[in-house]
Length: 594
Image 1 (cartoon, rainbow, N blue to C red):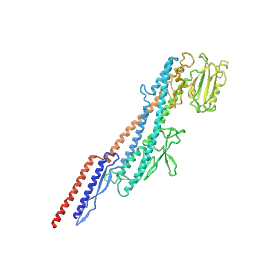
Image 2 (cartoon, one colour):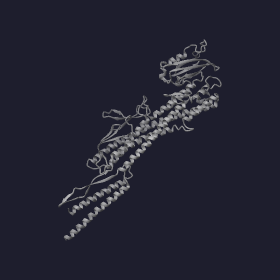
Image 3 (spheres, rainbow, N blue to C red):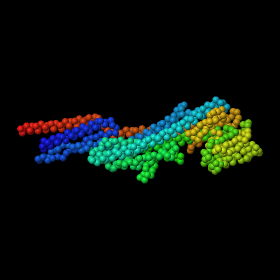
């Protein structure tokens, strides 16, 4: 082998060492780049040559500069990142919702409930005490405000989450576009035999982002394990990004997720994918993972006829709070309607006719109620019973009230109910009006009639979103009636109201006290939040373990790179020494020739 052949061999070593220094420098420069995968130079031996009777090596060349990347570990990291994002989003929002129901001593709806019932107990002791009535009015308003505020806060979170979903989907679409463009750049660079390490790092970062947002999964044509060490496994070939089995990126093309909110008065959006023919496919139920999946789980995916969410965690707890508030309103009003009055009028009934079925249009149940008649001395002088079954209409209720018959059994029709009162529907309200000196109260026998339609209401509203103290009682607390019969000292209504705290009533599908119904709601919310918190802690531990494994394989270690730098520096110096030695040998040879 000639001296010039040896020079080429030394030069190959010099060149390879230079590439090693360049790569090490690149690693060190990106040591704090969280999306960077460390790179390494792999060398291969150049073909040997036969010289005389021997075979002589001709040096080295750079085979490739490869990423120290394991696609299998990286995929587990993406999946763990998605679970972290999902659980953390649930945790943050449920903790915020739970903060609206502190239920500590002196704070929250539970405290307002206790103050409300204590006010009725005080009024029961002195039914005519104006100071007690004013305190009751204040505590009733505080309770109604707390319920309404807490409900509205949950509703605001739901709307805020909807806005966040919209922003996240815009980010998803931008990411899909970037991935498709990167695929094009990667293909262009690698089709010529090059390596697109830095571009692949950028794509990995976008993939992780997409996994966190919508739980995207990535399919490759092949996973190559032909790296310089067993831990290296690189994705190659055909590329797809899937969400719930729907391909959003295929190679260098992508499809955006569109959003539709036109049919929702509050702007609640649905997610859609446009097909090849321009038709839209709703994928709201398909997106189950990542931050958007958690947002949809909280906000709800299905909508009622008014385009309001009818499922989802927030809707679940809104419904539970609304069930509690509706029960509180109806049972309070049912008791309050026992207080004798000359006239009573229901809430607005929603366009009912006399032919409308009572049970279908209201929360009235099968059973009966009594309309008790009192004379001007406060004595009970008669009682009219009204019966309700599955076929009862508003008209049949009016008929039972207005039919003239001897309901007190004294042989006279002059003092029965129909002779002294008139029941009618006017301006979408059912009214009962006195014709003379008599008053009446409504005693319920489990029909919930007065409470369901709001006769002589103490609380106004239909549920948690609009509960309030009757405006007339708020302006004039002295008009609050603690009596049942119109007698001085009668405390029948106030006493029954105070017992409402401990007596069981029907809330939804279970029988509970008013306080128990609220406690059930609060405990359910706290339990769900605690379960999510514990789950998030478990997922965090799993994520940390996988992240550590990935970092061990792929992240830059400054200590290791300094060792590599010294190694390449030594190799470079040694190759340079070979060249300088050859230079002196050539000089010597030329000197001999002279």
